[in-house]
Every structure is written in C-alpha cells, then in structure tokens.
Image 1 (cartoon, one colour):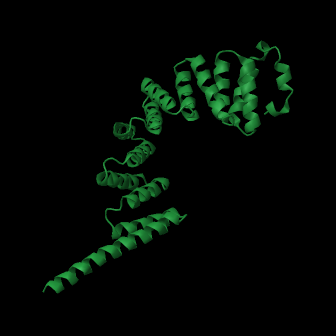
Image 2 (cartoon, helix red, strand yellow; image 1 turned 135 degrees about the vertical axis):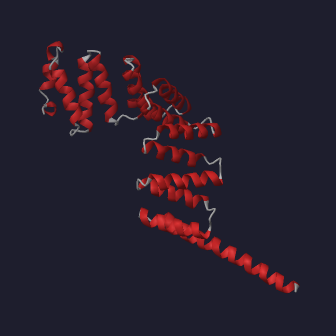
Image 3 (cartoon, one colour; image 1 turned 30 degrees about the vertical axis):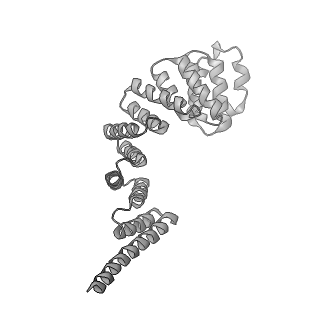
Length: 254
C-alpha cells in the first residue's frame, strides 16, 4: 500500500514538473517572437500551464499595451500586482496604460503606490510630473520634474518638460535655463532649440531666437513649426540690426 501511495505522489510531482517545463517553453517562444499577436498567443499558453507565472502576465500586458489594447493590458498588470504587491514595474506600466487611456487620476494613484515602494525612482517622478501636467496641476508637476532632476541630473527630458512648465507660468529666464540644460545634455534635440527660440521671441530677443531657429533647420529642414516661428520674427525684422544677414540664407525661405 505504501508503494502505491509513493507512485501516485511521484506521478503528481512529474505532472507539475511537466507543466512548468511547458510553461517555460511557451514563455521563451513568446519572448523571442517579433510578432506582438504571436507573443500574446504564446504567453497565454504559458499561463495556461502556470496560472501564477508573473513574468508571462507582465510581458503579455506589455504586448497588449503596445497593441493599444489597454483594458487587457491593465488586467494583466493588475494580476501581476495581485501576485506580487511590491512589483514596481507593474505599477509603473499600469500607470502608463492609464495615462494612455487619459485616466490620469488612476495613473497618479499607481505612481503614488510605486513611490511608496521606492522613493528614489526618478522615472516615476518624471512620469507623475507628466500626468500632473495633463491635470493642469503645474506646481506638483514642477516639483516632480525637479525631483527627477535631483535623482538623475542627466535626465534631459525632465529639464525639457520643466522648461515647458516655466514657460507656461511665464518664468522665462527659468525656461531658458532648462532648455539650455536640455541642449547641453542632448544637443540634437530640435524641440529644445525651437522652444528656447520661442522664449527668446517672447522676450523680444529676436537675434537669439533666430540663432536657435537656424539650429532647428540644420537638424531638421522639414520642421514646419520653425518656419512659422521665423515668419513671426520677419514681422519684427526692423528691430533686428543684422536681420539681412540671416534672410540671405536660402534655408530660411519657405
């Protein structure tokens, strides 16, 4: 009788092992697939063999998010959180998905939970700052961008977005500082030159604005916004002593 029990026990153990192996096989097939629909298919198969496969839920959720199937993505990230309430990436990705759905308050809640788990997560502060900006909560957005910069001084996107907030609040000198820092870190980011040019234009520093707009054109001759901005300065050309030198450059002509 004891031998029979032992054989039954071993059989059950082997089945569990087989399921785990199968789950891993499908997970790897999904992981190395380049097709999002196929990825979802294989991750789903892995989950069928292992209902608690956290990585499969997380990766399937990411695939759903990339396909803009946001509700299913949220469902998978929520399942990951149910299995591991300390999973920072799951909170972050669910928040990003809520943001994509324009459910900004829910996104804020997830970022708050994430930052309770890790107060040094610079990316979470940055993303929450973007979300606060959407909610027109400028002070909170500024605080989060500033914290992101403190934690990661090389985060040019945080400088850039803080520059936008300063511009909206008419703190033009601070906006110029942040756009300049953006350019120091990433000197090929055309939007930073364009936006700094806009600030110079508002401050009636037209020559500096033109200098920035020329840099935009050198980076991207097809940027339509910068030509419009240059046209605005053309109306003020009498205020620029050396404007003639600039307009002789054919790259500035529409």
